[in-house]
Length: 285
Image (cartoon, rainbow, N blue to C red; front, side, top):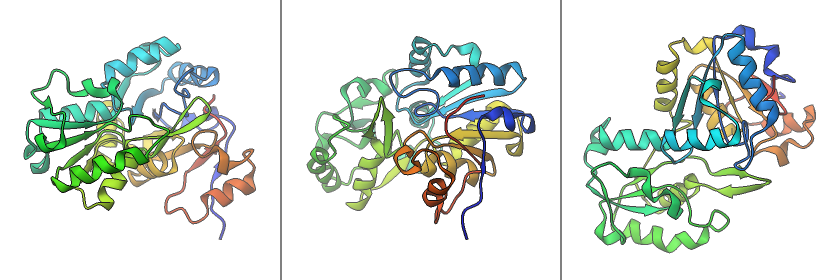
């Protein structure tokens, strides 16, 4: 049986069925370098039509930093109501532990990721340890060079030897930057779990991220439409929370989606445990 989904050209075709929209960033609103004009227009149209907008991103950065970056791309704070990042969720979880696992973490962390993300916990009472043997846990924000994943293997083995728990600040495996797919923190977390490492993820597709978005929006889940380009995080996360979702085929799955033909989309979605409600080539009104 072929997967069932509804192909749409833009969210204007279905927007009147909802009161709010949860929108992904990378691959939907921008490509990591420039914002998509159609996506900016879509945000304006959603707000003009009375829908609330929550941006929900697996960016391993504080929300204010992402907001500043969006502004520089031409996406201002008036075009959305709320912004949630996985980095912000990590910071909050370490400030106010939601469970015993987080409460048991020590004060010293070993950072895995690009140097410009070292400051994720700046302002908290945690301090960075430069060597795994001096750390209590791992803060994983990605790989130093997103194009190369193998270089982290030795470090991960050393961390596993010391039995360090890992917090993953970005569950994505890959993200679209310009016209290239680059590796994310989720890829390292997968490798660490394969070594027997203990990992906790913050962001999509996990339910706390969606609960936060729904709490901020103040609407019931059936009144909220999600939009994203990842079948693994955006689509699975929203559908598992009982929300309808638009899958944007021109993002990280664009090579498999082909030229957005119905047949290629069916092949891409065949066998997937969770299917999108709607499929669009791009995020546009």
